[in-house]
Length: 360
Length: 173
Image (tube, rainbow over all chains, first blue to last red; front, side, top):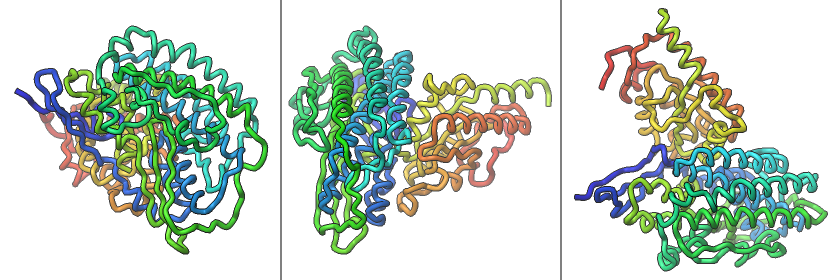
C-alpha cells in the first residue's frame, strides 16, 4: 500500500520553503509532487513600478546567492535598449565578479550537500573556505552579499589593486585544490552516499531541458559562457566540464571541476585586466521602445531576462525573468523515482535549487 | 526565585537554541545566518545551535518580508516554540519589507503577526551583527524566564490573537 509523506514547506533538510509530497511504497519513492510559491514576493510586478535605477536594486534582491548575476543580466538587457557598450575594463570586472560568485555558490552548495550527507566536518571545511571567497568579494565590492556592482553601461566599483586580488585568488585556488577537491572526489563517505542515486539519464535531461551543472552531469555539455559569450568570456580559456553518469556524484564532480575552472578564469581575467574607464558615464539614458533579452550562465544554469520598454517611460513595462531552477525543478521527479526515502533530501538538494529565484 | 529557576535562566542565556524560518527571504540573510555558525564566526561558542524543530528551540529567527503564503506557518511555528521564547527579525525585510514595500503578495512587516524582540538591520546583516542579535535575545530570554515559572508551556497559534506572552497554564499535550 502506498502512502504520502510530505516534506516541507518548513523542514530541517530544506533551506527554503517549498513542499515535496512523496508517494511511497514502503521505503521506496514511487512519485513526487512539488509545491512552490511560498517565496512569492511579486517582484516582476514591482519592477514595473520602479525606474531604471531602482529596478537594479530591486532585481539584486531576487536571489541573495546569485545577486550579481541577476543585476548583470538585467543591465545587459537594458544596455541593449539604451545602446550603451560597457568599456573593456568593466567587462573584465564583471567576469571576475561572476566567477567569484560561482565559486562561493558552488562551495556553499558543497557545504549544504555534505550537511545532508551527514558529513558535518566537510560542511565546516566548506564554510571556512567560503569565507575566504567572501573576503575577496568584500575587498572588491565592499559587501558580502548584495554587491550593487552593476549599472547601465558598466560597473560601480573598480578593482583598485589587482595584484592583491590575484594573491588572494591564488591562495584560494590552493585551498580548493588541497581541501575541497580531494574530499569531493576521493572521500569514501561522499562516494558511498552519492554514487548511483538520483540518476537523471541523458535522454531525460534533454527532454526536461535541464540547464547548468545538472545538464552537464548528465552528459549535455552546454555552457553559455562558451556557447554565447558575454562580458569578457570570449577571451578566456577554460574547459566545459561534463560527466556521463547523471547521478548525484556526477553533479558533485562537475561542480568540483568547475571550481578549478573558475579559479583558472579568475587568474586570467585579473592578469589581463585592461586599463581605462569602468563605466560609460553617460548621464542621460534614452531607452528605445521595444524588448531586449539577455542570457547569462549563473552558477545554477542559464538565467534569462526579457525587458520591455515603452516610449517616454522611466519604468520598464515588463521585466520577465526565467531562472535555472524553474527548468531544473521538474527533473527532481525523475530523480527521486525508485530512490530510498532517506536519500530524497540529498537528491533534491543536488540540483542546487533556489526557490527564491523561482518564486520571485 | 528559587535555585532551580535561577539555574534555568542561566541555561537559557548560555545555550540559546535557534530555529530558522525563511518567510520569503532572498537567501541573503539565510546564508549569513549559516555563515555565522561556521568556523570563522563560530556562534556555537555562545551555545547557539541551529535546531531542526521549533519545539527544541528557544529563539525564533525570521528572515524575509513575510509573504502571504508564510503568515500561517509563522504563527504556527511561533506557537510551537516553548515558552519563554524570543523572536529575532534578521535583516531589513522583516522589519520594514525593504525594497519589496507596496507588494501585494506581502503581509509584512513581521511585528504585525508575532511580537519581535530584536531587530537586526542590514541587507543582509553581517554575521557578527546576527550573532550580537541572538546574544541580545538570549539575555531577553533569561529575563523573561525570571518572570515566568519553569513549566514547559506549549502555546497554540490562536493564543496569539490576544496576548504576546502565553499564559501560564497546564502543560498541554
